[in-house]
Length: 283
Picture 1 (cartoon, rainbow, N blue to C red):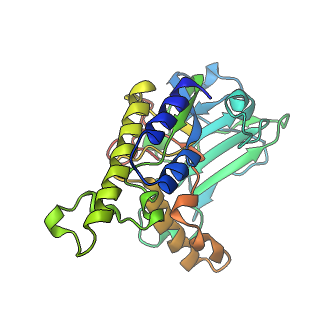
Picture 2: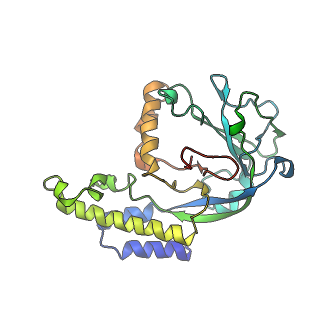
Picture 3: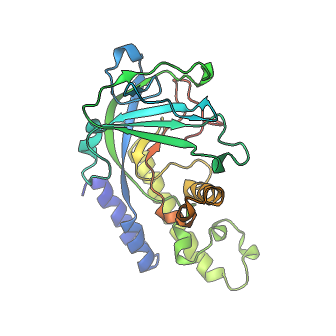
């Protein structure tokens, strides 16, 4: 256990939140792998190198993922051997390449999520022949992102967000964190005060980790928890999963996944390579 994790666990032990919540919060801590990047050119990057944006390196017979004939956006490729050292728990394979594509053009269209996967993740085994794929002609120029080379990686502790589903696992409402006391439902004052203590602790942990890891810049990461900008991202994933389950009878179990069970695989931030997700958000 490193000093940062020890400090977070001490913050939890020293708090006045219920014991069962404190235990669950300690058990919920997760490590992520943060990618530090710099602008590059594909010509300077080896085939299969870890990068965000640029052109994907795939086996020659691999088709560029599409939806209704339109190509998806290429987000990133991860050479898993690069990050193996930072994944001692073995949550990812330690060989091969993961390539990520996302339908950013159509993701917000009504009903889009029920008509096929919004995202595609391809796994290429280690040693497979790779070829740099050209841009599809139908891919808009603004969605042909310059490559960001991975200059280094770091292992960072992450914790659940205070406005995510964690608090509600114990019967507390997130609304209690923000409602004025006079607006609290009858009989909810005491549990609301407990919920606020939990929320304050989680916010303090989040601020401590943010400051410790200097998270003021771009946040590209694998694993851990997502860095929500307007609320915990697990709620968004949950509503999307339910919509997909309603539209695809082959995936009924997808809609039964609980908010607290979601795991982050990849987070890509808006960056200087032309990626701008919404209003300078994260994907």
